[in-house]
Image (cartoon, rainbow, N blue to C red; front, side):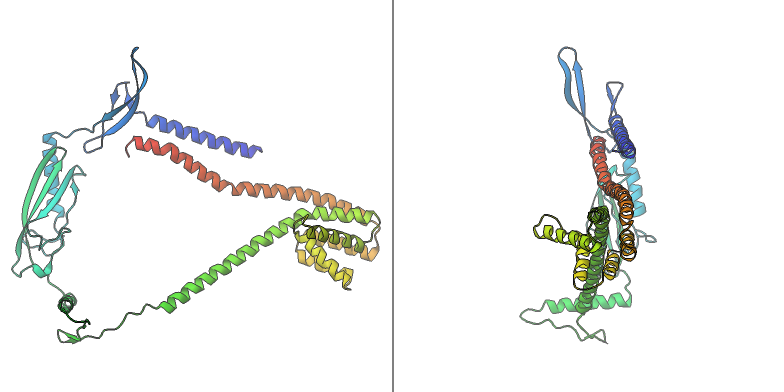
Amino acid sequence: MDRKRWIEAVIVCVILLLLAAYAESSGNKLQDNHVLAREKEGGRDQSVELLLDAGDVLQDYEYQVTIPATGITGQQAKEYFAQAKKEIDQSFYEAGEKPEHVTAAVHMQNSYAGGLVKAEWSFDRSDIVDVNGNMTDEEIPGNGVSVQACVTLRCGEEREEYVFSFMVYPRSLTDREQFLLDLQKALAEEGEKKGTSSFVLPERLDGIKLQWRQKKEHMVIKVLFFEIVVLILLRLAMLERRRIEEKKRKEQMELDYSEVVNKLLILLGSGMSLKQSWNRISTQYLDKRKKKRTQKRAVYEEMLTANYEICDGESERLAYEKFGERTGLGSYQRLVRILLQNLQTGSRGLCALLGQEASDALEERKALAKKMGEEAGTKMLLPLILMLGIVIAIIMVPAMLSFNV
């Protein structure tokens, strides 16, 4: 592990230690060795794990203490009840409406005074006002109806009822709302008919001719859109897969470059011609692949293709040039130029050029291996971050639970 990795590991360890120290210090509820803080009014009871020493009787004894929240006195409850009633008067009616004339839905809350006062609602005319505070327009007479609301307020152990009345009047409907209400009645009357096997939709209502038609689902358009999206995603996935395969292919060929140059150097140095050396490397690879002694390697497949072209009568120059174009890598194109120079001027000095190329290829392979290792380390960064998040959650969740958050 290099210095950079060591520094990263040390930083992560320090962060974890600081988080652990914070969780432990924030979870300490004991003050002056015998005082525990209670939750405020309306809070929940707490359970604290303590260690108890009692002379020779108990040593490091684990004891769980239950701490009730701060209780609410009767006087405090009255103050909270008064605050809750004031909030009810302010929030119960819709803006602009008064108790003497209510047409819109009323607003009921389950708690008031910052949650310290719980409220339970009931109405004497549930046929006029439902449990959600909405008005039933059909049941409201034109001259209005009086509705009495009863709110049971609870604050700690204290309880009080708040009763008030308000007048409900029918809401003035727009032409659209009135038409829809009449339509609903007409459809309800049709639905109440018994002994019929069909449901007849009205053709006229309030002097207006009605035309009904089936709502189209546009399934063809939806399916077509879905197919287009799927095809685009498949195409993008295919392109990404090809890109990844091409990248792996080039990395594999770059790693094999020094091996190919060394093999050519050895065979040419032993007295073989370039054509014989090329054929020897290709046939040895083909034999190993058939015997399943090696995996498929891209550069040797290209060399095998070039060898087939030479055997079929194509010139060596053209076959090597095509090989360099198919590889698409500067290193192999550089090798092809060296080999083509050998075809023009002879083999003198070729081994020296290949020897220098082999040395350079080895350095390039080392640099490539280092680069691939760094990329692998970068790819591992996301799992490490996820693991760090899990560790933080493991530390912080118990601390938060001890706070009763």
